[in-house]
Structures are given as structure tokens and as C-alpha cells.
Image (tube, rainbow, N blue to C red; front, side):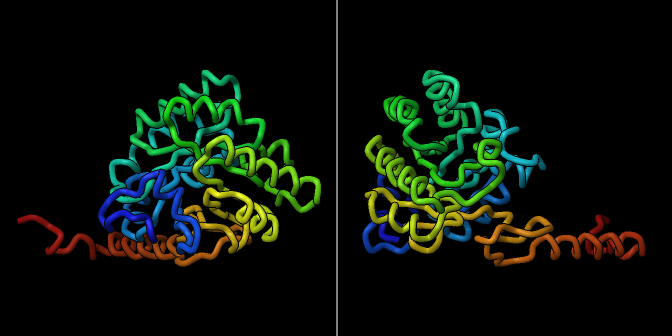
Length: 273
């Protein structure tokens, strides 16, 4: 990727933002602790996102609404202790930027100060402009998020593709333009038709990062647990699983348990004299 950085240097917000035309797509992956961050770093991703999806894949909640600021700080700080090159972006959880502009700036600052992150991400369109402007005025970079916004799951009545109707598509187009003009350095486009994501990508000068938005975006992001098959059960349509880690790990535990029960573990090599 043409970031104009050496292979060993950390990806910065300006580098992530500026290298759009003709560059290979940006690779963004979630991570939630030291172990998943180490996998993401070793895999050569350009950006690690500590998503509030941790509420579901790590903490076992039904959705992201139960995730707190303390949850995000705890997990993002663990990721930052391991990451070396990747840009680190942290989700602002539900209600951390909805009550007042002052609260939003204070919470964004906590995420930066207490985790070592490079930027924050928040959901929503034109209605978030006052909050985004205030966070940017505090010198904190902001990544936007449009389309299927998981913190709006109750309002949407579930996790549903957004922008299929012409009127809603135009609103999302306008939201993208407004967020770019406000100063976000990148836009996550989630759960929207391919054609709409391509239109938005062509209309804005900041990189778009797709998840369930087709191949026309400037980059892609997935949840690491989905990518690696770390949890049992079905995955969303937009996920391609590159491993079946859950099955492999279960098999390893079963093998170890059998060795213990049959006194094959520990052997002499795993014991001290």
C-alpha cells in the first residue's frame, strides 16, 4: 500500500486518508484483545478497529447496546499494547456521544488518552455534525459510519440492509457528502447495495471502508471472529470464512482432555525433575 511510509513505520491518519486514487484497497480488521491484535498485526492489516461488536463476539450480548465506555477502554488498551504498525481506531459506544457535545468530546478524549488509539469512530449522518466538529476541534480524528448502523438496531427493527429505496439512498449520499465536508478522514459503509456504495465512493474524497457493501469501496473490514470462524453458527452473507478456528480449537481441547483422562498428559517431557 502506497502510504509513503517505510514498511516498519506506523500507519497514520493522514497516510490512511490521502492514498486513495489507484491504490490497493485498505485492509481493516477488528481486534479486541492482545491475542487477536497480534494475529491482525502479523497478518499485515493496515488498520485495527476495536469495534463495539465486542459486545456480541466477546461479551456475549445480543447486540452492541450494552457496551460501555469502560468496556471499550479496557479492550482497546489491550490491543494497543500489542499493535505496532496498524492504525488504531476505537468505536464510541452507544450513548457516549448522543447526550451532549460536551459528553462526546470528553468520551472521545478518554478513548484516546486511556488507550493510546489514533482515532475514534461513531455512527450516523448529518445529525452528528455538531458532535464531529467538536471532537475534531479537540484534535481527535474521526471515522464516520453510514448505512446499517448497529447502534440503531432497535429503530431499524433488526440488522437490515439500508438504502434500497431511492429516497433513503439519496439521504445516505447526502450524509456522506456532509460527513466529508465536516472533516471525517474515512467512512465505513455497512449493509447497503453495491451500487449505492459505489456511488458514495465515487462522490467523496475520503476512503470508504465496506462491510456488506460490495467490492467497490476503497477498503474492506470484517470482524476477526467471523473471518477466522472463531464462533459456532451461521455468519452474515457478506462474510467469507478463511478458517474454521472454532472446530480446530474444540478438537484440540477434546484431544487434550482425552490425554488427561487416559494419563497420557503430562508426559516426562512436560514434567520437571
